[in-house]
Image (spheres, rainbow, N blue to C red):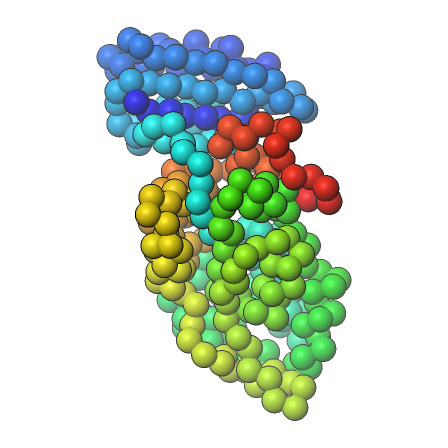
Length: 299
């Protein structure tokens, strides 16, 4: 059984379903297929399409072609309760790339952003790109980090609701980033993550040295962090979220990988994606009723 859950425009859903049914019939897998939907706010609906047979990639392609959803998740069975949620930080849990914003204080944002973009697209080795960007920040006062955090860094809409709701459901929440503890620790406290892993900027006499302290948090560390967390549970189900090439091994290792407004390679590697809307879409796709969401604070 293949199950696709998707969020799309309500007024287009009926026509989209008709064209999808014809495509399933042409593929010889329409028999036994089931569909149901319910309305959300803002003219959107969430629909579940269940198909008794077929290939996962083919169902994903069908969903994209006929529904063009804001968000979707394709699974091979009903999704069990999650035991772990692990997420990238920059451009996923927060809406910015911290190193790019920090570089702006040094008048180097354009140069640093170009390196960041190439690394996220998978065109540059992550460690080399990271070290090159950090070196450009040498001499920047450590106080610039606090100012940057307070004035430029904001959680992605829906991030706190997502994290707090999953925690309420008994899920371990992990923030793992190729960015920096100077940013990740306060963000994790604000949103409620249980565990934080990131890179450490070296500071001497109140200024960045242009170097890093400790090992590099790269794609392999993200994947191994997921596996380490999974090992804490005998049958733990893991959801991962990310947006760039550095997140691909983690997205693929998870039971369910969600690509949030992601680069093409990361989006293709994931089992689910959010192209429009905020992170609370994940809760809809997991079929967690809105009455169970934790929304005591903004986000």
